[in-house]
Length: 441
Image (spheres, rainbow, N blue to C red):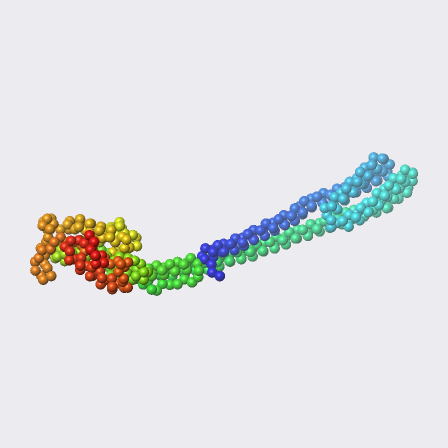
C-alpha cells in the first residue's frame, strides 16, 4: 500500500503521539496507584498507631481502676473501669473495619477482653460479699494473667500492622521501579522510532531533491530526455512526473522557439504545419488565410533592408492586435517568412478579420514611405529584370481556404489551393482578400 508524503508524515506523528500518550497514561496510572499506596501507608499508619496507643491506654486504665476498686472499694473506680472497657471495645471495632487482615487477632482480643471483664465483675461481687481474700486472689492471678495476654495480643496486632505497612512500602518501591523502567523503555522506543522515521524521511527527501536538482540542471543545459525517476506514490513522485511533463513541453517549446521567426517571434513553418495537422486530424472546420504584401521587394530595394524589417515588425504587431480584437484565444497567427503571414481561425470570423487587416494596412502603410514618395503615390525601384520601374504604394493580398467549403486532406493541398488564390489576388492593384475563388470586397 502506497502513502503520500503528507500521509507518511501524519502516520509518523500519529505513532509518536501514541507512544507519548501511552507513556503519559501509564505514568498517570502508576502515580495514581502510588498515591493510593502512599495514602494508605500515611493515613492508616497514623490512625492505627493512634488507635493502638489508645487501646493500650484503655487497658492500662482498666487495670488501674480494677486495683482502685479492690483497694478503695469506690463506686467511681468501678464506673471508670467500665467506661474504659467500652472505649476499648469501640476502638477494636474501628480497627477491624479498616484492617480486615487482623480480624482473627481482633476476635482473640475481644474474647480475652470479655473474660477480663467477666473476672472483674466476679471480683466486684466478691468485694460486695465481703470476701476480700478471694477477690485479691482473682486480681493477683487470673485478672493479671488475662491483662498480660491482652497486652501481648495488642503487641501482635501492632507487629502485624507494621508488617503490612512494610509490605505496602515494598510494593510502592517495586511499583516505582517498574513504572520507571517501563516509562524509560516506552520513551526510548518512541525516540528510536522518531529518529528512524526522521532519518528515512530525510533520506527520501534529500534523494528526491537531489534528483530534482539534477533534472533542473539537465533542463537548464538543454537535455530534455534524461529525466530522473522518483519511485513511490507521494507528492515527490508526482513532482517528478510533473518535471517529465514540463520537460516534454519545454522540448516542444524549444522546437517552436527555434522555428519561430527571429524578427517577429511568431511561430514558423514547423508550428504552422503542426497546427494544420492537428486541426485536420480533429476534423475541425477552419479557415486558412495567407497574407502577402505586394511590392515589398521594391520597397526593400528602395528603402533598405532595415526599413523593410521595421515594416515587417509593424505588420506582425498589427496582425497580433487584430487577432486579439477580432479573433479567439485558440486562433493561430504565424510567420512563414519574408512578407508572408498566416492566420488560422474559425470560418465565422475570417471575413471580419480579413476586412480589418485591409483597413488597418491601407490606413497605416503610407506612414512607412518618405513624404515625397507618399505624395506621388509610387516609388522608383528595380524590377525583376534589374531595370528601373514605378511601383505603387504597397497593398496586401489575402488568400483564404475554408475547409467547410473545400475538401482538403493534408497541409500540402491547402498550400497549393491558397497559392492559386494568392496569385489571383495579386492580379488586382489594391488590397483585397480572395476566398475559395470568389472575390469579396
